[in-house]
Image (cartoon, rainbow, N blue to C red; front, side, top):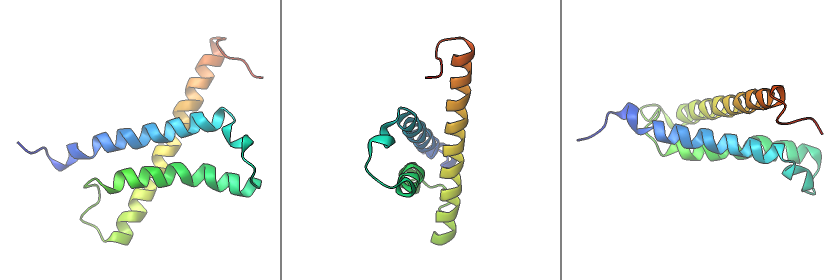
Length: 107
């Protein structure tokens, strides 16, 4: 039995979301500060690494497959950007809840 097309891209969306969330946790731990790069290059690495990983994960799915390749890439970029923003919002929310409960405190 074959699943409908809507069910085949959901696991890829979940994996791409987790990649973006883990990348933000990695950045918040200060790992990027140890790199010997100019700050502009650090900003580009910090922004485009999770986006390119999420696009690579989502490109293998049937998501937006019926569109032209250039339009599909733009749509996948938008979905990857939305996943990165949602992961950032989740990390911020969790940080605020943990701060409110007194589990974490500012350095």
